[in-house]
Image (cartoon, rainbow, N blue to C red; front, side):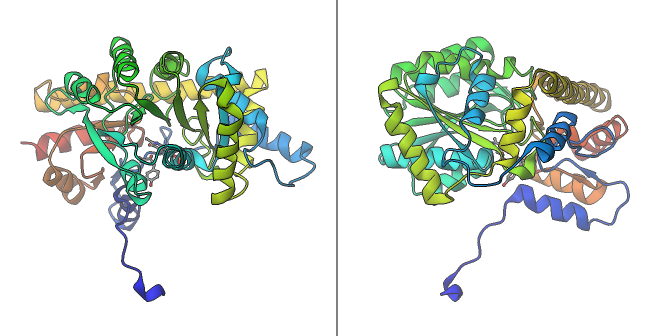
Length: 393
Ligand code: PLP
Ligand code: TYF
């Protein structure tokens, strides 16, 4: 049996981690995988997470199974964080999942179960795991225009034209904030128009929210999701706690399905069913930490202030990089970096130029020229700007 297996394509982002480790050069710079690093290059455990873990160690009396959906208190806390204090609980069915990836996977499985003919529409480009999982599940898939390589912004007219052609019942996958890989995001007026076109076509939005708090702020980054949740009758939200709580390896995510309250018991039963088919009970440790933080005023305040530090640090690096590139190239070609939000920006240089950054300068980024802003610091910003100016000359 095993001899029948064929090699599988590697994840290009994760491959970079190994290439970087194997590079013996002292002055190498890792701008690959989307993991936050502080100015000293570390990915620390957040203070509130440490405090919650200490408290949990003292108070936890059992590790018996949780429910198939995870702990209800976790889903409730996440619903408030994402949809706001007055989130209508009677519309929301939810399951805890292993990370945001697990939430996306379960969302797609739910779509397949409910609506096997539905096409899932993806932004071009998008996070490579989206098409990979969709293809694996055999779900029909199409792309909508998203990125304008000329301006480094959103190709809003292209996006709207393509979304207008979506069939009723098709699913449109949207990045709720901090688009990965481009860093380009619709503004508030554009999000309202996106909600209009979804409403008009009868499409179902699936919102991937992996970076709430990394863009314009915790509340601001949820604004598009809240708008769409308020406007559309049915919405799927796949959220991750990996980045904003810094608990990557704890695998903490949630899938919420919003719809008619009368349907909630059946929707919830289907979500529970999907968890049971795939892994029975979702991981609990990270979810419990998140619940403890979000339901304790002191821990919430400390977490918010550290998250804000993280966000502002990335914003400062963006500005420094945009300025350094302007100075080194004598042009405004990379001005969009200051406008982008989240961990990533797509530079818009060629694959050959990305390759030269790696071979000649020891600078690692994804082949489509996506860089992780958090991989930089005040010392490496000018090094990157000089290297980019050299390879595009
Ligand atoms: N969606 C996007 C766009 C991402 O970039 C990520 C990765 O961080 C995720 C979802 C989910 O990540 P995780 O499964 O680690 O929570
Ligand atoms: O895009 C990124 O870099 C992050 C981390 O299979 C990641 O989202 C990358 C690849 C992957 C899972 C997570």
